[in-house]
Amino acid sequence: MQATKLCKYCQTEIPKKAKVCPNCKRKLAPGGCLVAFLIFVTLVTISTVFSTNNLSDSNNQSETSQENKNNVVYETTDSKDNNPSDKSEEKKSSATLGERNALAAAKNYLNISGFSKKQLAEQLKFEGYSDSEAKFAVKNCGADWNEQAGRKAEEYMKINSFSKKQLIGQLEFEGFTKKQAEYGAKHIGY
Image (tube, rainbow, N blue to C red; front, top):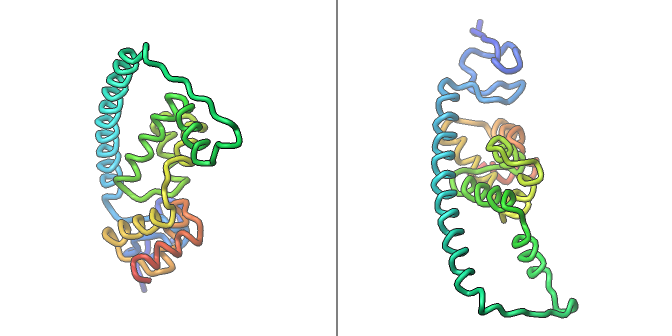
């Protein structure tokens, strides 16, 4: 007879030694909260450092624009000459301060860990960015979501052993599409 316990998330009876609930696919390993807390503290610290750097860069740019106030050059463009990359740059330059900061935060998070679109948007909203600012950042961060799934798969395999099916299920639970989750599993050798 195998010893069992209840999953702390879905309350399903599962094997006592299970590290991931076979029903809800959530990680059950002890210390998960501590690891999540340490990752959160690290991300907040890095975000603060980058925000401080961005603020000082912004102040330097403001001073430079004041110095160049008398040297303004106006450009005119014919609408036929505009290409899609110009429109993308124009959209980013017309972004609000909140959107620009959310984008910077998104890029910082992506440099630290693998994120799905869903996870990244949720993290930004948790940080206090509005839904529209988070969506803007996710859309414009330039992430390769397959690559992010591969990075997240690597992170999971460093913490725990997963079968291919479990790993794909966990990646899907984290917000990756089935195709991205399968890419992540293939990335680590499944």
